[in-house]
Amino acid sequence: MNPPPKLEKPWRRISLRVAQPREGLTWSEALTSPCIACESAPCCTHLTLHEFEVDGLTDLDYARYVLNFERMLLGISPDGKWHVYYRAPCRYLEQHTLRCTIHDTPIQPNVCKNFSPYACWYKASYGGPVSDTLIQIDRVRMDWILERTKFRDDRSIESMPSQDEMRAVFPTLPVVEDPPGPADEIVRADAVYPAWKLLIKSGKPEEPAREHSFAELDNPCNGCDAYCCTSLVFPQRSPINHAQVDYFRYALGFPGIELGVGGGNWTITIRTKCRHLNGTKCGVYGTGDRPLMCSYYDAHKCGYKHQFGPMRPQGFVRVRYEEFDAVASAFRFNETGITTKIPTADEVRAAIEASWRDGATITE
Image (cartoon, rainbow, N blue to C red; front, side, top):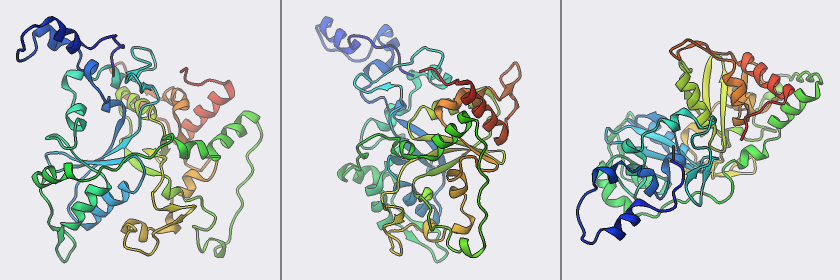
């Protein structure tokens, strides 16, 4: 998405040879890639995940829930739609130069190669505290909105601050900073995924899962590693063409990201952490700070424990960046790039495990 690094910025070179100030760029100057003068590379630090509408209490509660997790950001577009973003630098972004270290190489995603910096909305959206294209919402701004929103008896929204009011006030509010340390802390601490890989490479048979009685599962949260508090899951369309499969490679390039495949559905999972998590327990349990969707979550129907607890969960498989090539090889396309075969969860697992036996991984 970024061009190869250059030693000097064009505006600096131009300022030396132009004696009198003037307005506007010349044609040749305008053709210079805008990426060269970009000072933040937001396209390589913000991953777009999900879009939703806010019409009532539960919608705002979902927004509050998402913002409880580290490195998450919301945005409101001019049409009123709310968007979810993950803030973390791509693994291939050289942060001191803001250049892509795999630019124009075979492993650079096509979505990056084909992105036009001349039509970039990232810079306009993230260039300052407010913009006309995106109103950024963090926890402080979310609290400001909640304090000024009124609801009807059915909990639909009666009134809430306008976008103009938000743009006027938000620059005066403190900004929530991302936490220090690596963005893939949860991934690094996960013992299940490497244990699965070790099992396959060793060639040993998998031990059968122990069966439990009804009484033993009376409180399914007992002994759980709080996967619901260390994972955010966003549904994705089944990839119907080559470009959508390539998008998954782009998404996996961000640290802390996993793909999930199960039941014909695809998901993007952010392995992050809720700020209220205390060990494996909720630090605001039973208080008004706890989101409604957590308070009324039915742990007996929990899918997190099934997906993240076992090494080889039935009907579900987790995919990390290093396994992307194996997963992509299980797809089939026609000559126009339309998907003719989408692999099942079992086929994805088989492709990953075959790559481990063969020792094949993405070349970095």
